[in-house]
Length: 441
Image 1 (cartoon, rainbow, N blue to C red):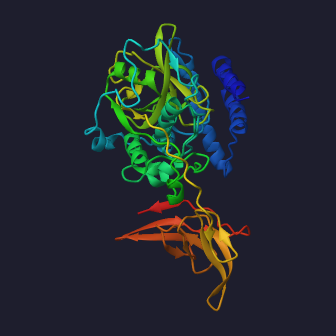
Image 2 (cartoon, rainbow, N blue to C red; image 1 turned 120 degrees about the horizontal axis):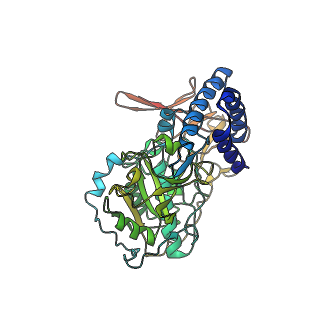
Image 3 (cartoon, rainbow, N blue to C red; image 1 turned 90 degrees about the vertical axis):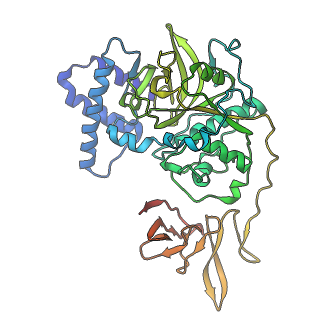
C-alpha cells in the first residue's frame, strides 16, 4: 500500500486548496505516522515533528508545482526530519580520505573483470534484469553507505563471474575494516576492497547480519570467506565515457552529493539537481537508460524501499558537466574478479565451558555460580573473547575490558581518554543482552 500513500500525497499536494493546509497537513501527518510506524516519546516532540513535516510539505508542494521539473518529491520516510538532521544521520562517505589509495592506484578502467569496449556498449542496460543486484537494503542511521556501495559492487561481479548472487555482510566491514574506514562514522569503498582482498574474502549477510551500529569484530566470522575478489579499479575522475564502459561490464560504486534537500525527499523521475559536487554519500550504479531524449543512470541507494523509486533514483547523465550531477562522475570504482571463490570454511565448533556445558561458536563462557573455586553454572556472552565481569551478571567486549557494573558501562583507557560502551546484561535465557556505543571523549 506504500504506492497508494505516495500517490495520495502527490495528489493532495498538487490539488488541495491552501485554505485547508493546517487541517490537511495534520491529517496527512497522522496517516504518514501510521504508514511508517512512527511514534514519539512525548506530545511536545510530536508537535515539533508536525511542524517539521509541514515545512517539508511546503517544500514538496512548491517543487511539484514547477512545470519544468523532471522529477517529483514526496513526503517519504524522512519527512519528519529537518534537512540538517537528515544530513547528520544518513550520510557517511569520507571522500577526503581517498588520497592514500587512489593516488597510487592504476586509473585504467580495464581490469581483471574486463570492461566493455566503447563500440560494444548497449544503448541501455539494467543489471537487475541480469540477476546481478541484491534487494535494496536499509542502512538506518548508521553512516556506512560506503559498506553498502562496496558490497553491492562485489555482489554484482561475483554473480557475473560465478553465476551466484549472494548478499554480503556490511556488518563485517563496519566491525572489522578499521584500518582507514570508521564504521558508522564513514568510510571509502577503495579501502573496503583492499580489506576484502587482504582478508581473502567476505562473509554473507545471513551469517553476519546488519545491526545498524558499530560493533566488535567477530574474528570467527571474519574467517568465513564466502566471496573473494582479486582487486579493484578506479575509474578516471570526471570521465563519463569510461564510467559508462565500466557500468556496461558490471555494477559500479560511486560517491555523490546526497545531502541536497531534493535528494532527501526524491520520489521519482530523472533527478537533475540542483546538487553540489561535495561528495558525502556512496551509492551503486546498476545500469543506465534514456527517456524522452534524456539519458540517466539507474542508481541503487541504501535507504530502504520507501525512499525514491522503491529504493532507487534515476540521475541525469550526459549533463554537460564533466563531474556529473551530484559529482557522480568524480569518484567511481569497482572490484575485479576472475578466480573462483575459496572453498567454504568448516563452521567453528561450540565453545567448551566444562565437560557437560558449552556455548555456541563465537560466544564466551562466563561463570554465573561458583563454589570453592569450582564453577557450578555457566552463562553465554554473545561476544567473542569477552571479559566476564566479577558480578557474574555482565560481560564486556575484549577491547573494552574494564567492567563498571554500577554505571552499566564497559571502559577502555587510552592515554587520558576513556572510551565507553554499555555493559551486556544477563537474562534468563543464559544469553547476555545487547550493547551499543555510547560516546568517546
